[in-house]
Image (tube, rainbow, N blue to C red; front, side):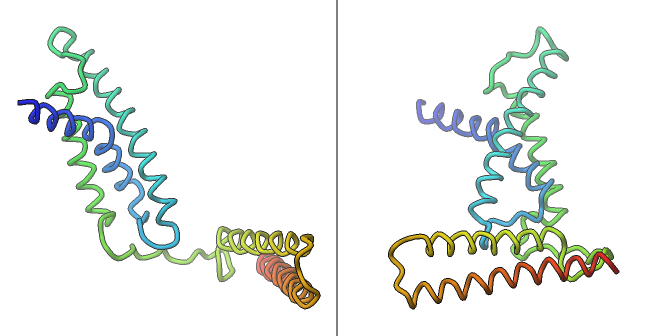
Length: 180
């Protein structure tokens, strides 16, 4: 009997604290994939968002049930009515996620390119500039450290010049696109 209570508590816990939020998150953000270079970041975002949405939804549904039936609803997280409503929300949101392609193995088709000009969007340019800035800071730190040998120091200086030139080129190219 204790195993059954433990199983019921575990299922109720997952249903109250994770599943509805997960289904809603996947329906809202079908393009999020848990593969590739952003997999860990997306996993943290999805888990956090799932928890927060589930707790919020549980509180809202519980409040709604309490006001709809003040004498007939027992305010407990393992209440079958609460679990039934949360399961219904999970199924509907899961269906919306399936319809939007959230659970497909292959990524969704990317949207049509914008007509704002330029090969890459502002986000992509910002990301590239940020990566170059990080590499520049890493190289500058390497140049300040006492360890590099003269050939290594020359190599770092040369790479630093390349990075500065690449950042300037990206900025010039984007400014020229905006000027057109």
